Image 1: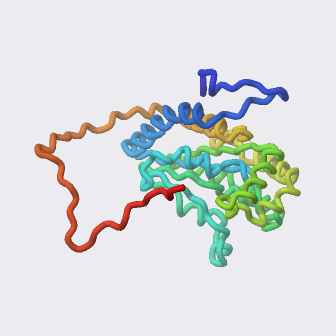
Image 2 (image 1 turned 30 degrees about the vertical axis):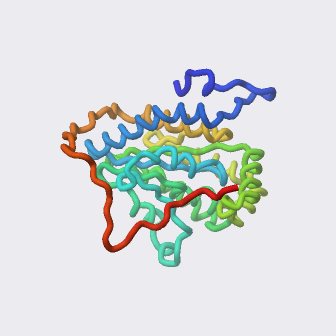
Image 3 (image 1 turned 180 degrees about the horizontal axis):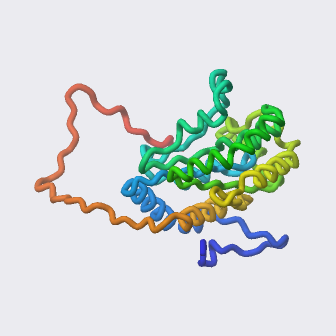
Length: 278
């Protein structure tokens, strides 16, 4: 089970939905999962496992936050985020999967795709960036492509982060009004507001074509992003094999003297930051 304590299990509110998880119980529930993720990364390095996790969903679903929750305690040289910009002219002439293949993990690595090759079945289809023929061709190729990845030993996990439109509107409004989040608000985000049903239809077509035995999809409710992150991480860890690997023993002898204070000849550190007084 994901959460057994009362704080994280969640009480139902008047409309029958689960009360949003607050920060403190969220952080408490995330802590043991983070330890397991660190263990998973140690296991991947020890065994040479290659792990690919795809994070897909509507704009504002919470893909970035979920990825940060997975990787924030992992070695960034081992676990990396793949968040590709729109293709350039050269990439538009390539095999569609080519630029994504370049970011697949080597032995012991973990690649977290913030959107993936499924752009073609989602935003490219809905916004008219790809033709119906291109989308149909893509949906025929994906099961074959992913079978090749799995047959080669890659551990592939595909998550769709589900969000109702009222939550999407709330998060878009927050991006609009918060100067620190304004950079997240793009013209495509705004155009997507009128295409909620079109995105639903595109997702369902994608699932029918690409939810396979060798590479299944997992849908996670992200109306409450904190609960969604916990649910996703717990599911990911549960679907991996036994990842327990003891950390290597490290000899850490006593220094044998008093620690030294940093000294400077050429330059001094700049003035330390102080809070402004009232």
